[in-house]
Every structure is written in structure tokens, then in C-alpha cells.
Image (cartoon, rainbow, N blue to C red; front, side, top):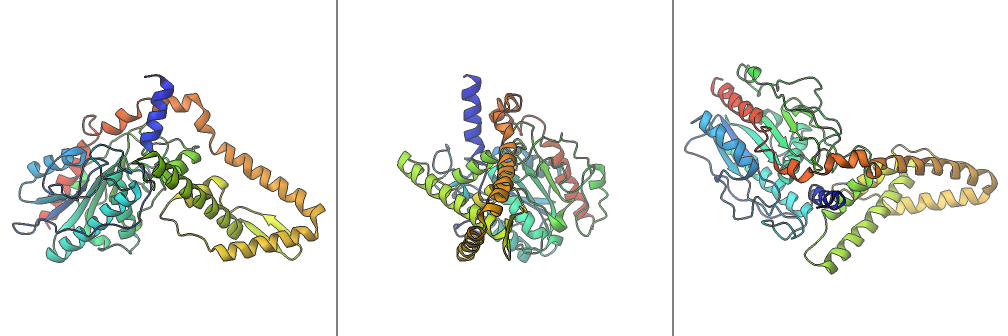
Length: 404
């Protein structure tokens, strides 16, 4: 396959790693027992690696390759289950369901919330760990962000650790422990002295770039969330200056791709909605009308506004307020066009130049060459040694919790 075609395929596959919370299916019961363990591990598989009827105790896929050794190394201390969900991308990924990616991730997140709640209610002394890969990592990272900010289904004191692999929400340039640059040893589980965890170092290499979706922070869970990414994996290591790539991935994540007509309709509709939302957000937040003067003073660049608007997790701006702001802008400019039009043209020209710069990596051959093997990078976590530190960490957490 030519370099150009391989890059095109890589960029298309990267679109499987974006989007988030919409509607979702009812949650199913979590297998618990016999008895309550010190640590309960919840795994969420990647695209095409799960289904609504998947066996919650089958150690398969990338996540199973991590959890199975933990069970062997800490017998009796750990129980696990995998979240059964559609794991699809608009019906075009083998093994995945027919729903758009964003709906699929929302399904996983709904099931994950219910599972964590059930474990916390059933086993009050058990702490929970979450493991997610690719699409599953996005569901787990969203869960962790909510728990860390105090709005999740369980408290932060019930979470021992979170391990994410190929996470589409990875912040640009994030270290293995996001928010803790230079730290290799995870924070101890709540209520433990961390003796076993203190012997674990997450020495996985730090990847360049960031996730194809939106960056997330973890609040109270900072230090207990690991974000592991292979450099060149577009899901979690997309170029810094590639805003249009992120916009395209987020829009594709919301599309029905099972046939060309459905795909064109949903892609076109979501693109129009995203552009409209981005413009309304710019009007409401970046334009200022002060008496007879109008200024464009952006709080965020156009690239960030577009990426934010394309993300289905972002609430739509107030359309009526935006229309009123536009009326005020046009009326003020009409009253003094000779002064205001040249000023605004200069300000918007600078913003457009910044938008071009924020996509410069998309036309840089040196950058694009990093992604020629992105499919292999994305699929290689179980064979490249990237899971070993996660296994050691989970085992250490189980021993620390058992010694409380």
C-alpha cells in the first residue's frame, strides 16, 4: 500500500476514537462473588472487542490481556468483569454494533456507572479499579473525570486506580500520570499506606501529541489515573496542530455509516450544526460591543471553538442570545463603518491566520510520516510490553488493600 493510502486509512481509523455522551442502553448486573474482594476491576474493551451479550467474565482483547495476569498474581484478592456494550463505529467496524461511535461510548459509560454503583453498594469495603482501551478508554476517562470532580456515580475514595490505553481524551503532551509531570509512582489507594504501590514505576514512554477528542482532567483522582499511549497512535497521539482532524473525527463519531446515503446525511447535518454552534459561541464570547465600538477579542482561537462545537458533550450555545449579539454588532458597525470595518477585518485576518497555523501539521510530510504505521501502533498494546506496568500496579493495589 502506498504511503498516501496508508495515511488516509490511518486517518479514517483515527475517527473511530472520538465523540461521547448521548443516549444509551439499560445497564446489566455485575457478577460479584463469592464474597467481596479487596479490589474489583472493571474492564471496558475497545472498538469491535465487545457486544451487548459479551461474557462479562471472559478475559479477551487488550483489556483481558492485562486483567488475566492480575487475577493469577493476586488470587482471592481480585474480582473482575468486563462491561458488555456495542463497541461499534456507525456499523462499519467488524465485530462492532450498528450505533454511531458516540452512542456506543455513551452505552459503555452508562453500564460502567451502574456497575461501579452496584459494587460500591454490595461491597462497602471493596475499592474499584477501571481499565479501558481505545473506545473503552474514552468511557473510563469520562467516568474518572466525573468521579474526580465530585459528580460521578461513586466517590473518589472508592477508586483505587484507573489505567487508560490509547485514550482519545488524552491531553496534549500528557505524562503517564496526567497532572503529575515527572511522577512515575502512582498515588496509593485511599485508606492504604501504599507500601506495595510504592514499588511500582510506570515507566512507559511518553507519547507526543494528544488524543483525537477533547482533553480531560481528573480532579481528586489525579495521581491515580495513568494514561498510556504509543507514539504514532492517532487515537491518543494525534498531531498538536491538527484541529480539522479532531473536528472530522468528532463529527464522524456521531454518524450512521452503514450506507453512503445515511453517512452523507448525518455527516452533513452534524457539520452544519457544529459550524453554527461554533459561530454562535464566537459571537457570545469573543465579540464585544461597547457603546459605539466593536472588538473581536478571542478568549479561545477559532480552532478550539470548532473542536469544542463538534464534540457532542458540549452544550449548544443560546441561539437567541447569539442572534441578538449579531444584531448589535451589525447595527454598531453600520453606524461607523469607515472606522470599524478595517479594524475588524484586521482582527479576523489574524484569527484566520492562527486557524491555518493550528492545522499546519496536516500538511507537514515529516509529521504525517509518524502515522504511517498508526494501525499497528494502535493494535499493539498487548504485544509491545505496554501492559506490564499496569499489571504490576493492579497487583500492588490489591495487596495494599488486602493489608488494610
